Amino acid sequence: MATEVRPRDPSMRPPMVPLATLIGRELRGGKSEKPAIKYGHAAFAKRGEDYFLVRPDCLRVPGDAASSFSVFAIFDGHNGVSAAVFAKEHLLEHVMSAIPQGIGREEWLEALPRALVAGFVKTDIDFQRKGETSGTTATLVVVDGWTVTVASVGDSRCILDSQDGVVSLLTVDHRLEENVEERERVTASGGEVGRLNICGGKEVGPLRCWPGGLCLSRSIGDTDVGEFIVPIPHVKQVKLSSVGGRLIIASDGIWDALSSELAAKACRGIPAELAAKLVVKEALRTSGLKDDTTCLVVDIIPSDHTLPLPSPVKQQNKFRSLFGKKPQNAAGKPNKLSSVGAVEELFEEGSAMLEERLGKSFSSRENTGLLRCAICQTDQVPDDDLFVNSGDLFSPPSKQQEGPYLCVDCRRKKDAMEGKRPSDSSMSR
Ligand SMILES: [Zn+2]
Image (cartoon, rainbow, N blue to C red; front, side, top):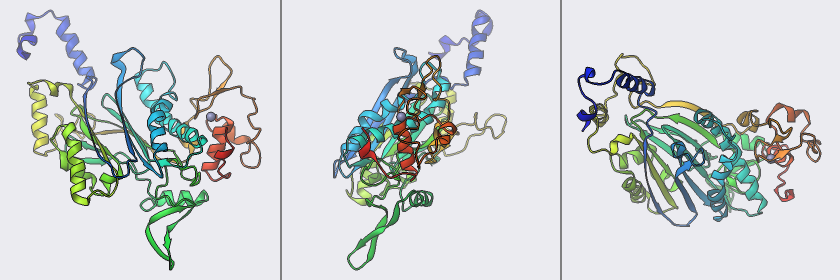
């Protein structure tokens, strides 16, 4: 019982213990308590090209259970399944290997957006070397405490339903039809954007890029489509308040049938395991089975929600959110950090330019004299044919010093994505 551990008369306890506890609580603000993660998955296959990944117990520090974090991902493949399978098997590992070793949690979270970019690009390069032609969307979600980091290429959305009933999109749809910026980027990098021509010159369907005819502007794989279809993810990092929230990650089979609000509404108040099934069911009911339909629901909730008797404070929050009222903090000030249910935005970047995404902090290798490639993480001797093979017409050597260090192969990939050299994945090892 709560009353047994917290006697009402402070004079009954040794003075240091309650003070330390009080200060500790004050400093933590209830936020360092790790939330509970509950998740559910549901899918309905039509072509069998959707894959998903659930890793609830990853460790930042090997052997340290306190450093755990969770990963959820969806891969919606097209023109075959090999890219989706490959991304499911390798993407997470490539992201993690791009995070410097031995850093603390805050630094780790700060390094994550860059590591996600490096991991997505490395996965794409490695897959293209296999010479297969399929492609896949990839939406990878890392949940560490109350911090949620989402990286995505393609159109497998991740939405956040925060406890105050506000639904927000954590991804960007990389669809040519809906994304003017991406159309401009593809065109500037040498692709053509237009609709499918059927006989008689009539244009049908959504905007696609040519060659290849893909509706997406970013993906992993798609070796045959053109390097302007880049694997550089949009990354968004947010910190939930200590009342938590719900993530819904799903392939376009869901989002073509349901808006973000409808998907959130379809399962609000239902446990995650059942919620995912309800979202899929609602999408099928609305549109029928037109496409592979995959849904992950992830609840990030205060761990004491699992106790039979919630504390009065939590109970109050719960009722407030049930009635849909926006609670005010004690001082009545618009303080984002302390207001219940508010989501703090930590990071967002969607640029397709690698020098804007990778920074310089990965480039120096202390004590070794080696330079580490910011994408594939291989160490190289600095003057080891740095500019040979790639320092010709396309990439003047001066460029190397401006951005992050890239090895010859990764720099060739970067130039190809930016339309500065023809796609040459077939030339790679
Ligand atoms: Zn490299």
